[in-house]
View 1 (cartoon, rainbow, N blue to C red):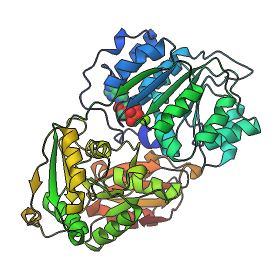
View 2 (tube, rainbow, N blue to C red):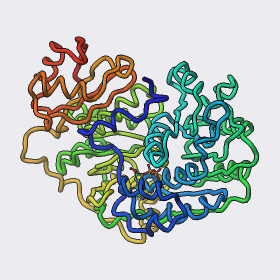
View 3 (cartoon, rainbow, N blue to C red):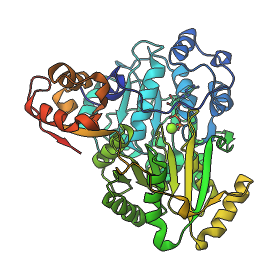
View 4 (cartoon, rainbow, N blue to C red):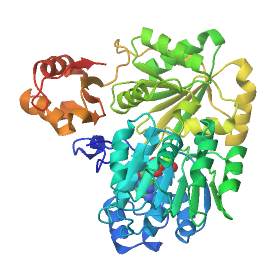
Length: 490
Ligand code: ADP
Ligand code: MG
């Protein structure tokens, strides 16, 4: 089994594991039943719990289902995958065959992570029909399983531009029957220098097709890209403000020398279970992680220089509750679908008020309340002024001296610890094998075990901090899937 052809992502298919995706806060738009979709698809949407459309879905689905090219802009977490997934699947003819299923929809994404998220969501939507094959083609993954998987054909391909191009050049992928081309996270693909690759992929696609472009922001480059490849596109832009009513924003004035220390004070005072700290530069990220780690806080850095494996590991640890703070630049965090964020800290004030709104909107999702803290020096007051202007209100200032270390003497600690088992899909390990080893063999309670993520070469299991040592020793001495395994605590 490999990632390219597995029927579902093992990490999300295990019943014991909660999905890492954020459902949008209380969706209350028009019902999906208004749309011209098959009865099977309507039933499937109900099963998935998708009853009302999100604003971007309500605005774009009628146009896209009618066949129009579309430029759609909406913030992260607004449900864009369904907005392009439904039109792509509605047009698809599962029986169209050229000796094997022909590729009728192609979704280009900037990173493997995002491609995996899109694949998972499209597979869920595709359950309405029998046997829709979705294949993921991303760089950084071995090409051989992808080739093997393509030999049997696919209806939908999701991939990164470079790798998709690679397959087109090898002629392992053919787009002659393509009906729908989706450019997802177009702004980020441009940031990552994919413009030429995208152009080359488009050159392999038939002229008669529907092109759907989705983007969180709409800089000039994206506009240019759209004009090159699209026919008379309709535009749907939802730059509406995040629902900030549940987000409590506070500003603190800091001297430059206090800034990084102030982050520790905020964490200690408010003790959020999970936080993203945004910095304007990679260097600032690095410095902050060092300062926080020195205080015993589990903080990890997410930046563009991490290789894919390290990046996956950071995100797994953050999502499974074993890392308190993710320290990131805006570029590194773009497009991430991260749930249950209690706080956002703006370590530096961004020069772009729109980016500020984006950062802050990452907390307070799914009906939960959230904190947004911003640290501003005198030099940054102009930026704060522009933010106030855009938000239409004055920001609320608090003095740093108000932050008192909590009475609990323990430093802020995440509830769980990640154990890494060296062995993954390659060794045919499944989440159930690990859960079984911990509960049946070692006698731990199911509730003490958190998320289990099986990657290609590694398996990550989150366990309660209180049992971490025992679980580690137990796994080291025991067996998973009948074999002894190497395990370490991260
Ligand atoms: P985006 O691509 O805009 O960042 P996603 O497509 O990743 O957003 O969707 C975010 C989350 O919302 C996903 O977990 C998805 O399953 C969920 N979702 C999408 N549409 C709906 C809907 N109409 N009702 C409820 N949940 C939805
Ligand atoms: Mg998306």
